[in-house]
Image 1 (cartoon, one colour):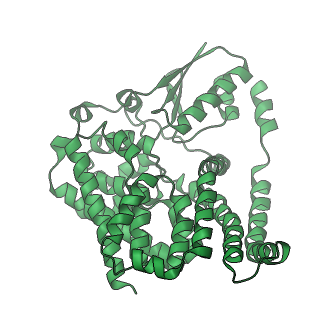
Image 2: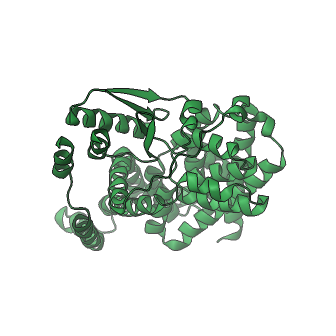
Amino acid sequence: MKKIEVLGSGCNNCIRLEKNAREAAAAVGIEAEITKVTDYAEIMAYGIMSTPGLVIDGTVVSYGRVPSAGDIAVWLSE
Amino acid sequence: MTSVSITAVRRLPTWPTAAVAAVAWLIAWFINLPAANWAAYDLLGLQQGSHLGDAVAFFLLDVPKVLLLLTGIVTLVSFLRSFVSPERVRRALAGRGVLPGTMAAAGFGIVTPFCSCSAVPLFIGFVEAGVPLGVTFAFLVASPMVNEVALVLLWGLFGPGVALLYMGAGLTVAVLSGLLIGRLGLERYVEDYVWKIHAGAGAIEIRPTLGDRVRDAWRSTVDIVRRVLPFVVAGIAVGALIHGFVPTDLVVSVGGRGNPLAVPALVGLGVPLYSNAAGTIPIVEALIGKGLPLGSALAFMMAVTALSVPELVILRRVMKPRLIAVFVAVVGAGILLVGYGFNAFIA
């Protein structure tokens, strides 16, 4: 069970990122809980300024870009 | 192993694909003009110089031209600016003097990836790192005002002169707004919670590979182009009608220097057109062709990109209404100044 968080206020890029994360989890075949973090104080607590950000099990793996489902799949299977 | 297979299936080889795309782009760019003329005057048999013929030729020339400019150069710009992250900019700005800091912030504002949805984390991040309020504002003004899509289209349609004037004027407004807002001591109008946020220790710097940057740039270009396409085509259609049918006298008498209200009226018209920079430029192109003065055109463009209601709504989450009002007033005054200034000094 992986915990995936998508950091961002809900703009277009955040939606694309969430979609990619879902696709990646499905492709790798692991169970993942995907949550959206929209509260700015919480986003800032991860120490990033450029959204969208992607956090897997508490670790920031990407920010300021929308990684592809393929990239996310690699991170998920690590 | 599934992960490896999905990445492999989805990806074309990055570099050969990029090279083929670049060559195709260049060929399309050079055959655009003869192809449009051929289609309008030979294929459709329209009369050269007639109202309809000119309008159709304008449309057929501009749609591929604007699309080529958008896809080609936005990809390039997105790629280049992936190297200038806000995290880096913040490090470069913290602890600088007011004037050099403000000027650097305005300059970074042009190149830094920024969409209105990251305005808030950016603002908090800057303020939290001790970047002065005025410097932060110089960045917030320059970033949307010198819009890269607008810059690229102005360059492609009017040449480097107009594009550089637009950029210079935008930078000047951003620097002056930053200096002024810094002077006014408005810190108490920033929402109180902003000062209390403690950002986590700067996340480890993640550097995407070169291939990642190219693919990201392409994907975000596709996203941008898809979003603005209907506005661009509509804008070009309106531009084509103006080009073919609106008499020059009308544009000059309503929008010309003789009408002192033309600049504020155009600014007022530009505000609700936010985020449609790409669609408004073909209209501006046609209007300039019909004698609209350059200052009025630049003021209009700037109002479209720099002042947008959705962005103000987002900024309201970190700024009290007083500060928002000052922001709008200062930027609006700057835009009017650019309009009147260019109209007065550039023939």
